[in-house]
Length: 472
Image (cartoon, rainbow, N blue to C red; front, side):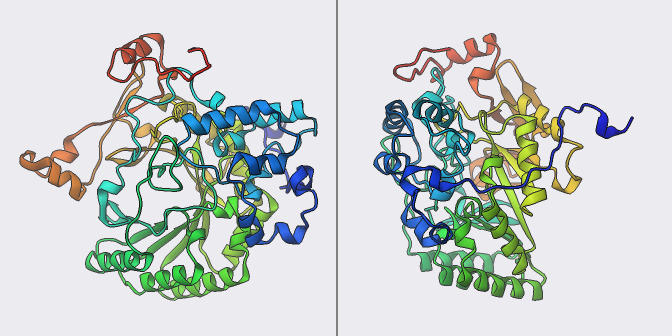
């Protein structure tokens, strides 16, 4: 008997990528392929509010959906609405054009669940964990200059802009990125972009231990290309920088941007200089479900590789209702790796931002998922599931040094110090940050009853009901 005849927990079937037909949506019925491929058309027709969503969807969505969307925006959303047509088109892609069936499929759609959250998505008793924070990773506390987070000994994160071509509901930088919402007044960058970039470059010149720079935001696709190219060329002039990673979810959400001839030509110039100086230049993007990986996404990734980018890698987020099953993860990874030339790299546990409990998974579930996907993909293309532990950093989910599954608290250690921690340690001495165990918390609804009772007795842990819904 051959292995191909054995019933496996996951059965791989190669599936060609397909671009959903945007003309199935009433508002885009007359949009031509040339318009669809145009980055400026995509940006000009982003959906930013309920009125614009109605204009696209016509009668396909019933009033119930708009009511739940409005309630979520008024009471729970941490991110304002911003949906490029490319991304909206991947929601409910093969659903009959009958309002009842389409609305039901749209509510259930995995891409919709994280790009366009509604009130009924939120957890009815615990929409937020008691320890959720708006800057959950304390990145701004580790700014050495505005927009430059120096968290790891040899790596920094440069945030050049605080906007994106699309706003994901689970954004880890929801404190900084995008427009304010009724729930949240955003932190704002103060410096002019040129001044911010100058200060970032000056810090890197003075800090030769930094060899790896993640250039992000927001999203690089929102930085005017001449400005971004100038910054990258200056970065490459620093002989101490050996890795540059360009972070852009637009490879998936707005691939038309990265297919623009002027952008590809400029990136080719940057890549050629990086190659001459033996600097590793990669692009990191953000896909969470196989539906969002389309032929245009594959075309953009291939174009990036063709102009000299070393790798295009995916950093997804593990979310319930989106991709938190072995089949969902493997379907996505095979589409990325096998069809789009995008390397599956990381899946992060959803960070502990407010109103995110319905997305988050427990550490135990994440560990089981990591084990379940092993052995199907090539080793170099098997993504690591990681937890970005506040004050610690990225850790594989099996690296917890202790785990109380009843109360849902895992404990983590680290092997480096930050300047912020050394300042806070004071008389405890410089070794103190390395001696500490840092807690991370499972979503409360995944805990056994004794754990939920314990949390209900903690400050902020009591029932926090969403209006109109009964607690589970």
